[in-house]
Image (tube, rainbow, N blue to C red; front, side, top):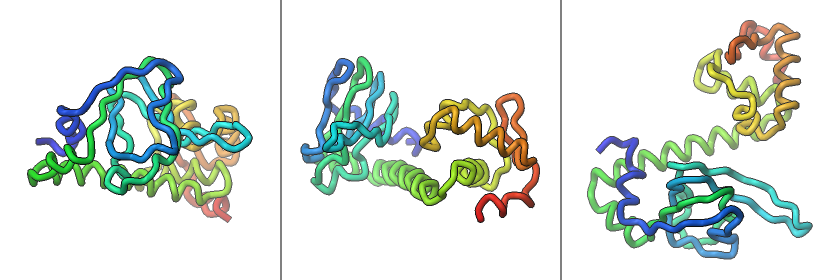
Length: 201
């Protein structure tokens, strides 16, 4: 089995459910006993403050999974899981996951997927440690020892950085004016590494 397809095989015996827009799949008071995958549509994981304000922690689209990091802990979901549109979700119980993991090949592929998820979370935590949007943008460009981001979609990049498109566009324009980066044909490239230190001071 290709390690990158672990979340296809593990959900073969999952239970499929359909949800309409704004339907609640799980609340923060529910104990997590299963792992889920979005088959079609999309969901959001959010927290609701006492004031009633909703904070979106993460958006999950078709093919992506949720709760794989907490399913074995029997703790509450970290937030409300709500359908953003007409959505189909498939969930598999903790018991069935253990049955699946009895095969070494399945265990290896599952751990591969979990490790990738943890790596992504580590990047997000490091991203949050930076104070300015410019710092976050430079970190995102250089985190894979690369100096370029290709096929840039401003709205997607803004979502990754947790900011508005307008704020990101201003930061990109500032960095271009300062001679730190170039932004052409949906590509952002660092053109002067010597100026990077000043950004992180």
